[in-house]
Image 1 (cartoon, one colour):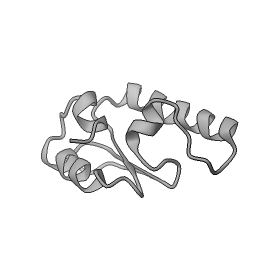
Image 2 (cartoon, rainbow, N blue to C red):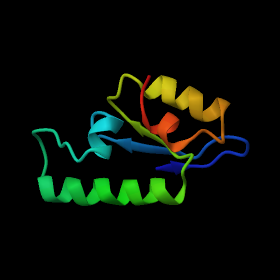
Image 3 (cartoon, rainbow, N blue to C red):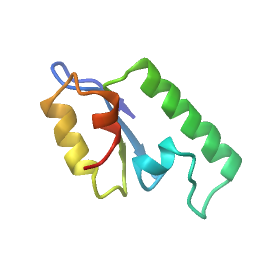
Image 4 (spheres, helix red, strand yellow):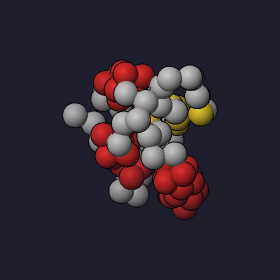
Length: 87
């Protein structure tokens, strides 16, 4: 789900698509699900990130999601690297 709030970076809630943003960005899939389908979805998310560089990707099970969410809300112009990389 893509959320855009005025004054904030766009937020993409990807749910269970991946466990961590880093996995999605590097085509690392978990042991569950259809690998080809997951990789195709990962590619779509990365394409969206290219179109919206400040996009914050928020997987449901990423321990860094709260920090990434806060960063996205605090700095709407955050760089792609800052928004996509935990810590």
